[in-house]
Length: 304
Image (cartoon, rainbow, N blue to C red):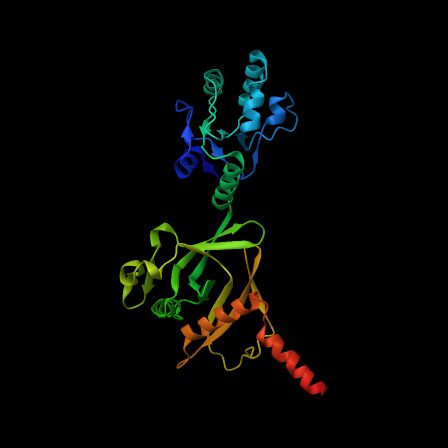
């Protein structure tokens, strides 16, 4: 995954201090570096593939150097194929240094944020946009603050169930195709592709614009994925879990997500079952596991 410097400038509203230089270079990592040790003349192990951040300390250190040394070391930094140099606190750079950046065709950007806030903001932005991504088939909803992916074979009733859940006050994130990103070690978020955002397909009716039909309070652009609810046709020969002790999980981008299987048959209120599954998952996250509590109660009863 990568993102262009031009896109970074646009999304983060950064100041372009070298407008003559093309912003078509690519950023491939969310890590950043403050090149203080390089300004001191040490270039071994220089992580030039990262965005270079020039903060207050580096800026004032530059001005303590003799002009010839300052130009030489800045020229050495700019000779590496860095994605861009980002200057915090609107400190700017002397024209002589900008001329060196122009000579090497390196983008220099400015921001009014202090260095710590700037690094934090850039890292959050880059980690999201450079995150590992995949697509899964299903419906993604926010139910009581729990991100629920509804899966099942085509025609099982995923979208119809989603419409019923929207009527009950829950939020649609994506229908049919879910774009999933892995943020950090074990957190995944889902969103709809731009083309189908806020849309849902119901067989027999067609494509519906949920935002227009139910208002902005019925949609959400993205949500964390907490649980997968898989719908399948009721199988008389299959033994379904009745206590909830046998938890199963599905791996999405190598992150294990709890999975609940709900058998579908006439007269079952599937939307209500999904609501209950979301509430139950939320209880577990808050430390209470009803099935385990019942098992412990039963064990105590038998001992007595």
